[in-house]
Amino acid sequence: MPLRILLIEDNDDARQLLRWMLELEGHEVAAAADGRDGITRCRDFRPDVAIVDISLPDMTGYDVARQIRATSHGSKIVVIAMTGYSSPDDRGRAIDAGFDLHLVKPVDPDDLVELLAGRAAGGVGHALRLRRYLLRA
Image 1: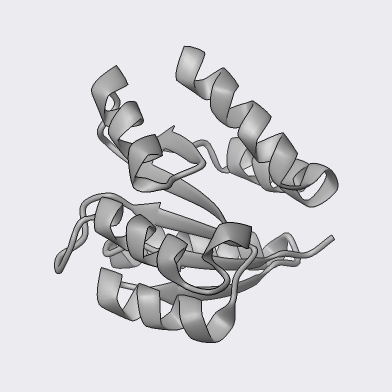
Image 2 (image 1 turned 90 degrees about the vertical axis):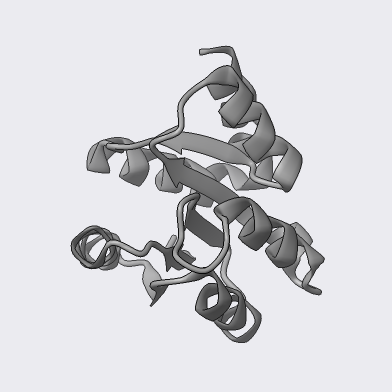
């Protein structure tokens, strides 16, 4: 089942590669290079999933997640942090900011495809179970 995915990533190459990979899997993807544009696109696009880099040029991914959660559609979105920050404190900070999942770069494309396939099949409950698993890892 295709998903509507918002990708917020400031690295042009990474953003284009991920977008291409997700579109090949049949998903509809909107992309943004910074947080403010990402929040605007989130309101207009109404994604099922938002994949957000933590280090953005204009604001942190934590702030982006909080603002996404504050939108009328925000509680229905699975929000995934994709970051180089990997400590337990970083994971906790991401969850506190409203992320459902915290993935550490470099993210294996096959793992991301499997995760999204599970989200499509299992709904938000699957993402939350996976979140608990990742937090223990």
